[in-house]
Image (cartoon, rainbow, N blue to C red; front, side):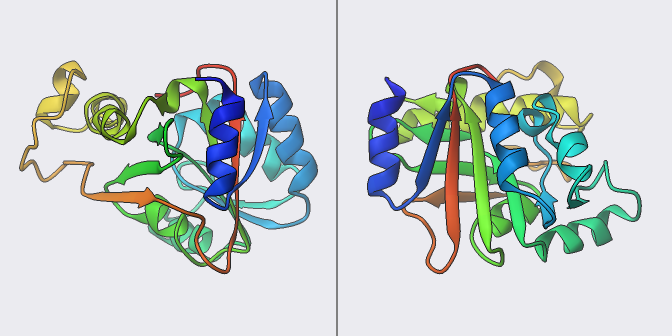
Length: 200
């Protein structure tokens, strides 16, 4: 699908949308837009690959567990209270512009719904699927197993990173699902689409 079509669908759903050819262009844009602010960030391979933790922390107050020093739980609470929040998407439905995320702790998905002045959802072209069902399948059977493997979780999906086993493991990372049908009320939300494969 051409990004122009998806951009129109996302804008119809109330999101602001910016499209970039490369991750470098997107990172430069975000560094111009976000300056002198408090910024929260969830765990994201996409954001890590873009170097945004390092670049944004140079001129903002950044809260991201695993990067910001301190107790991870406290850092997540600080991130939840930040002015700006950044996360990626586990899947985007190309035909409707619905945005899907799965979370284990809830810090990313809760911040995509409420509490910030602005939320940026950053996604490479590999996150876009033809429709809602394929986007959900991607989130459960591609993204979650790869993340479980990356995090060293003791789950059936982490062993091969092949698909979801709908397990009962205490280390299961897919515990909550959000679908953004439209932009949330009373919060600015911008989708950053990048014509490059990033993250899972």
